[in-house]
Length: 126
Image (cartoon, rainbow, N blue to C red):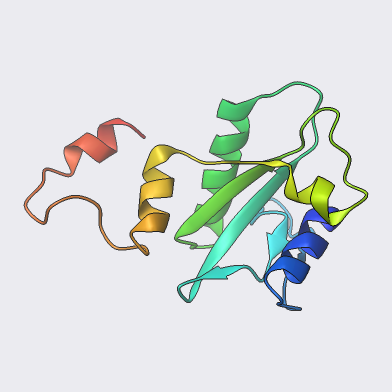
């Protein structure tokens, strides 16, 4: 699944730097490397599990982004019954992230909310 996602993103984004990351020890930094957004690294965690464990897997993706000092991250989850033997099949898999991460992505990595907004709201939801 990891190789299929790396190949798909390299093809879709026309970027040969995107590849499956080699294992790096205890401080994992995600499954796919070379993905960039607005000049910032994007950590991608890939899961092919029979049972969805979104909370656990999202936490893993967030931790790996912190290990990589990456602003952006996402979880790619294989969909049951959808094959990965074609670009259409791989492109039909799920991408999951928190709403905060999605807003950060849409806001090009800039701080969220008005400048005078109390940051404790965001901290309480982590």
